Length: 174
Image (cartoon, rainbow, N blue to C red):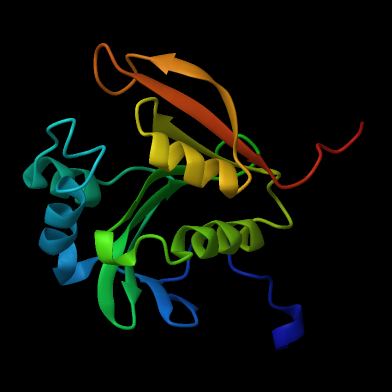
């Protein structure tokens, strides 16, 4: 079998992805630092998610869930957890960029990478955002996500999450 005959790997299954100076790779020994960093930023901080609880989320086995430490120029920059397959594309369970890594186009690079990973199989990227998180809602809108509808009490009682969709391709006819 030649390289041309080798089928491509399934989406998100490689251990390491390089997007120029941004790497998406294994969490490994950085799990405690990642958990503490995510727990320190909103919406997780505002919702009282502890570093220990975030760590448990990061290491708990879950089918069809892919988790990555984000490293910019070799330094921890954030965390990504996604589920795939979802509804004709991946669902971003968590995307968290540490303050020093925000407003640098990294979320766009991650979303564009996800779209390339599922180009032959997916037509959407999905996520939820907390209704009071205006900055995140604006950032996702700028990335092409459209608000689909509210999901009250999904994460925290009395709080509403907004379900969002980025359409990558039209559904096939027939």
